[in-house]
Length: 147
Ligand code: DQA
Image 1 (cartoon, rainbow, N blue to C red):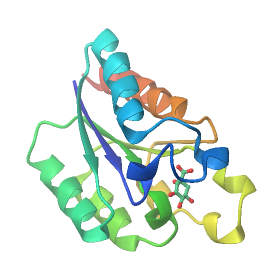
Image 2: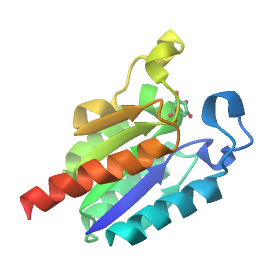
Image 3: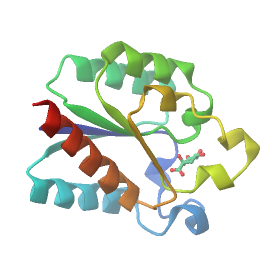
């Protein structure tokens, strides 16, 4: 089983950006934490981070041509604005889970919309970086059932 973890804008600034909301772990720490989790679960994992919407669309499309079984996606602020990411997820039809480190539903009104959610089979918010692991566990079960 192979999972692709995609992080959007400013998530490369984890640990530096608003630690009260996003915690003190860096993006590198996040990658290591997910790698360890996946190693234990014998899941192959690949990572992608970009601050650019179109590049994220390209990476999602590319996943269609690879043997990616599922995707974990934290689109950052593009969650609340990007129909292009929603369309890309729908286009490839790869099971996807949406992760937010912060509890977006308790934040500003503009964070209450998630365009990508419609194309995701699982959403986790407000569990810090553990949310990524929860999403992976969910997807693993889902894929296992299918195979
Ligand atoms: C975020 C929440 C978004 O509203 C914000 O723009 C981010 C991070 C989160 O992980 O909590 O960049 O997706």
